Length: 111
Image (cartoon, rainbow, N blue to C red; front, side):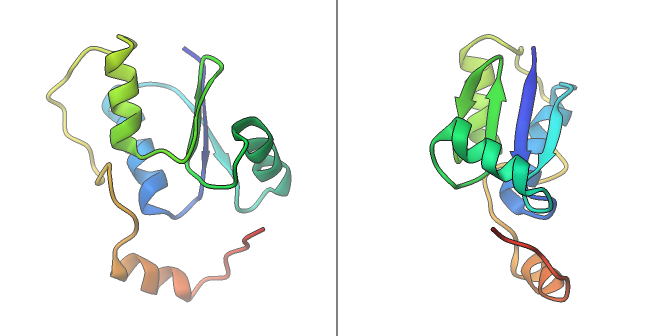
């Protein structure tokens, strides 16, 4: 399975997507859409919209998706088998107020 995940470096939704791939031990390309304008442009061109996370699995684009939705897609299409392993991050949530406060002290580039 070939997986390209268009993600922000610091984002609750992006971390949820990463957590699902780690839960199932799936290798994936973690594509930074914040610090590389070309990556963001590629995501928008492929997905047809500007919101992230977006995940491409074997050529199928899942746009503006949560980790929970990625997991549902993987299970529904029998690309993974169910597991009781837990995730290290919430799979259906944005950043907490603490995370937003921490990021406010850093320079983040948005396009």
